[in-house]
Image 1: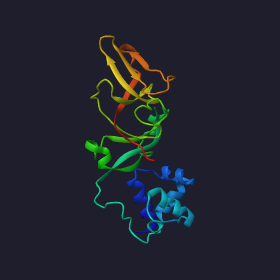
Image 2 (image 1 turned 60 degrees about the vertical axis):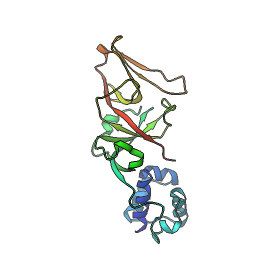
Image 3 (image 1 turned 90 degrees about the vertical axis):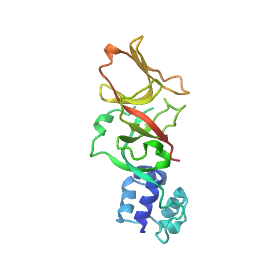
Length: 215
């Protein structure tokens, strides 16, 4: 396996995007892309940094031996991935969510559990501290399109189809209100509350079914 293929395999097995790896190394995402395509090769000092990130010998990055700490039979699936955060709002997520902007990310079935291989899953990043009792800023969120919601579910929703956010969902049929509550140690975050008749501009994109943290 050559250097580019090795870096790509290690990166995807760890659930990292090219941008994630680039940020860890202090290089541009296009540099990581050029390595993986075989158009360029990392300097030895950079190769050592890559090896340290993935916990493998530098000889693995150089393509001299196969990465022995990755079981080839480890079950993984690919998922649609949008390299954008959602407030927990990243504005204009609707505009960003197009086929042209979607990448793919591979996650192990051990992480995804019963949602492994689900075609209705979109992977995004949490952005902010409004859900920090549940998951930290930067966590990877698996969002499933579904109408089957229960009080307390964590959902990604939009206001006026442009401001997307991630909060806990509650529906009160007696009071005829729907609310989206933060779950944070920071008291500055406040809930969004809408009466049924005023909720036409509220759209729920999906439910967060899995989250994971890439260190």
